[in-house]
Length: 356
Image (spheres, rainbow, N blue to C red):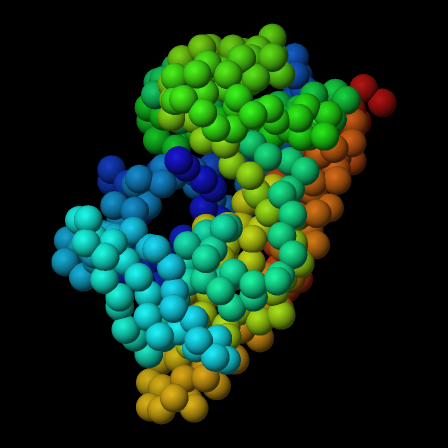
């Protein structure tokens, strides 16, 4: 529904001629505010300069505009791959307007997210475990809430740890909220995971209200004004990186290649970085051998750059599960090893330190 775009991802988009301006500009993010469930400020830090919150819809629109109206794009349902010996794909099955057809290509790019069928096709036995911390995500149109959020990412935490409610402004009228929770302490029931849409919406509302319904303003109001038939249950995957991001004539990008913890705020920007690296490494390939060499370089390059995100994501999850403290109130954005350390504080204001 919406997400944080970090400066690196925005710069990459602009290099492709994708401009986040006007009605698709999103909201610049200036500061991160960590609060307790009563709304008291625990920790404050500057966001990386140039970060912004943006609706998924607006980013998609910006991409389509960069494609000159989108004539080159066809939307279809992906049904699966025909995989033969040595993991060579003979065709991809797509369904468009009710008709199914096989698309034959030299190279297939799997970019279909955390539950990627392409990844499963080329690494069928790779272990995937649901992450301990799922999240509910909602989008609310409320100018008052957007004004309250301003240019800040706000996140409220339970004192005992294991529950957090984030509020991300994505334009002048909308905010995205997300509820992260420890599923071992607060297990998901069948009624909040699947079933009749009307019953499901009611069950999800009761679940969210049970965890944060009595928390500080503006959380109760946001929950009350949310259409829970449109709330998404996001279940991240906990896994090590697959050995490489391509096999045969299939290459993976984004969460299909490297499922990252939501705590890293790196999913979208890393997918964009994948796309750039892949384009650079295979551009001008004049033979199948040259193409395979380019895929090897892409895989090695991006595997090394994404590995720190996996490790930092696990550390951020562990801090989230522990009781709230100054040490655990860190900015939820992971960085590469060649960037500033993720857990180093910059300009900050800590209520804990002031009280001490």
